[in-house]
Structure formats: C-alpha cells, structure tokens
Amino acid sequence: MKGFERFTEKISGDISEIFARKIDFQEHMEHGNAFAWENLVNDKKFASNIRARDKLSKEEKFLVDIFQEFVEISNSYSCLKNVEIYIRRFPYGPLGISKVDYLRYTIENYLHEIYILRERLKTSTTRIERMLRKIKKPLFDSEIFNTLKKDVISSFENIARMRSGHVHLERFSTISIDNLVTIELLSRGDMLPAKALYQQKCKQVRKKWTGIIKKVNNSIESMLDDYFDTLYKELFTKSGKLKLK
Image 1 (cartoon, rainbow, N blue to C red):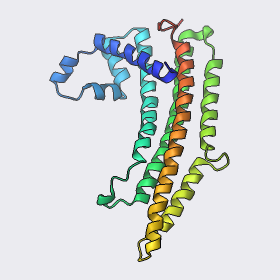
Image 2: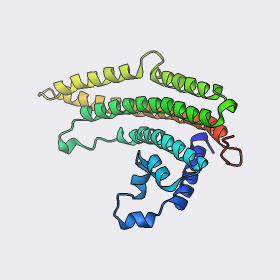
Image 3: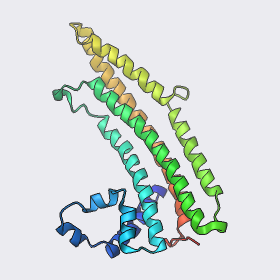
Image 4: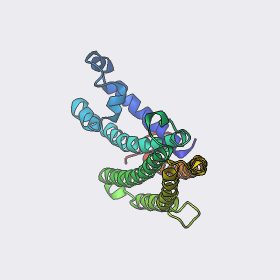
C-alpha cells in the first residue's frame, strides 16, 4: 500500500472510531442535517467543538488535529485529480461559454489549486511539527520535519518547471491560451479557415494540457506518497499504534 493511501486508511479509521465513541449521530440527525457526517468532518470548528463537549484523551485530541490537517491536503489533491476529467469535456457551449474560456478557467484554477496544495503542505508540516515538539519535548527530532519542508518546496519547484524543462508552467499556460484567444476572435467573423483553425487548436491545447495535468498529478501523487510515508513512520508504529512518547 502506498504512503498516501496507507495514511488515509489509518487516520480515517482512527477518527471513525473516535466518532463512534464520542458522537451521538442519532441525536444530531433528529435535529436536522446540520450535523450530518459530511458537514461534521469538514467543519473547521469540529476539533474545538468535539474537545469542549467530550473531553477527549490526549491521544484522541492529537488524532483529531492531525485529521483536520489531512482533510485540507486531501481535498486539494482531490480537486487536482478531478481536473483530469474536467479538461476532457466542453460542457457549457449551450450556455454561451466558449471553449477557450472554459479551458482558461479550468487551467487557471488547476494552477491555483497546485499553489493551495503547496501552501497547505507547508503549513500543515509546521503545525504537526509544533504539536509533536510540544508533546515530545527533548525527544523531538526536528530534522525529519526540516527535510519534509525542503522536499515539499523542491517538489513543487520541479513541477513548475515541468513543461519542457525551461518554460515555467504558468507562463506556458498564458502563451497557449493567449494564442487561442486570438484565433477565437478571428473565428467570429466570416473567415471559414479561422473557424476551422480555432476548432483544431482547441483540440490541440486540450490534448496537450490533458497530458500535462496527468503528468503533474502523477508527480504530486509520488511526492504525497513519500511525504505521508515519512509522516506515518513518525506518528505510528509498524503495528499502527500512535507513538507520542
């Protein structure tokens, strides 16, 4: 089992057990859907609310905090994976959204989500480091987290340069979309060659970015596997027990 998948299974399983012991779902559901499962696990106030109400143990509080950090990272990664599907379709033509506008929106949001994931990883690494430092104190090894942060920064720098090794990914997106916008404007007139060229170029840009997004996501998946493999070893024993001492 790969690092990200193993960590997902472990932290989700542990939190599910805490929910089962501490949360009366029947009580919540009787008062409406405000505390349904999806809202509960995504509520940013969940960690403080559950602690104030149920007096979790030190280990349970720690797991809840780790889970909150993991949810943010997992959500960003899911968004990046979903773009592999979005980029293959032009679903909004009947609503007046042009192909180039849809491509621009999809690509720009994809690049922005890469930035969000990078920042969340950096922030979460620092937060988890502080949690462990506070608990372990003199036994805490900061070098592991220094290496994690350096690896995150290095990985995303490599991703940004992925397009042919010398053109920055964001700069390449600007070039490809700007060229397509020019052709799209020309195609609005009576120039049939421009209309045909526009359709051809839309397919080319979509195909190229489909490949780029797949390649980038594979690199991010590999990086997350390494990241969570290291984090798992730091937080849990081989048998899956939490190690805070």
